[in-house]
Image (cartoon, rainbow, N blue to C red):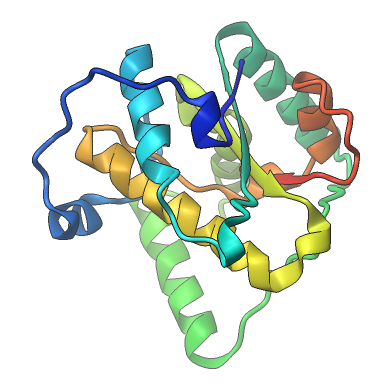
Length: 209
């Protein structure tokens, strides 16, 4: 497991940076839900996080914290999360989440869901299929890495915007290196598992995936 959060903690890399433009990276980014079981070279990972660290933040406090799991640790987290979901354990996220939207926002939400389920050939009344599709989130879509992103909740909404900008910088940088991702709000459901996995002692840290 790796804790990558400040530039001083990321080793300088000798990897060659890609030539992809920012515009191409923005248009190329998409939420991928199927991954190859392929390891990313460590120097590439280091460089990706090093570049993302250039994101702006209020007073340069760099509030984001990220913990990356792969291998046995990732498999353990996946097993634990799936077990909780299947057992019906209620989610206990650190932050409140609004799952209902209205007007044009609801329309966009529905259109997105229809497109997603249609691509998986899952009908509106196929409850088993929808449950299976939902469970794939907690299986991390078989991605070889899972990153949990968070911050100290005392920062509040304003500084949370900085974390969002950092996440976008990270995802676009990944695209430029030929690496795709899928931001998943469902990773907020069981933060205690994340704290335990990474031996995070500060219980006030809050995490989502």
